Length: 160
Image: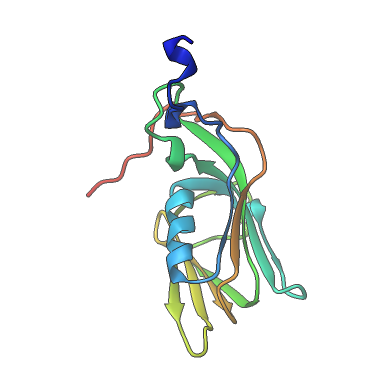
């Protein structure tokens, strides 16, 4: 038996599976926020279905979970970020009439109210924000395309 037959598998050899995650509390939502940080999306890719009480975004998410990978250039992937039990949606700092606008998501946070209800705040670059008033946290982040090389070919950077 050769040495290669008995080597342990390495993390780096694992397959890169698409994300399909849910969030039901503030801690879960922080995980989704960290994975969706620096996502970009056209303003036209936000949808609220008031009857279904669902708000969704089709985002171009930076693959933070793979950022340290040296096998390929930094990647993005299209993902759906969706929220259920949404009662109201409001925004500020966003001109919804400018359909050419590209937005950049900085964070997703929860401001608790009573009995599990509260507001989910999507903070955008440039002082914009979207507020979702929800009965409870019910969010999903699901990759819907194969990863592609980030157009910038670099990892997003933040000023301290």
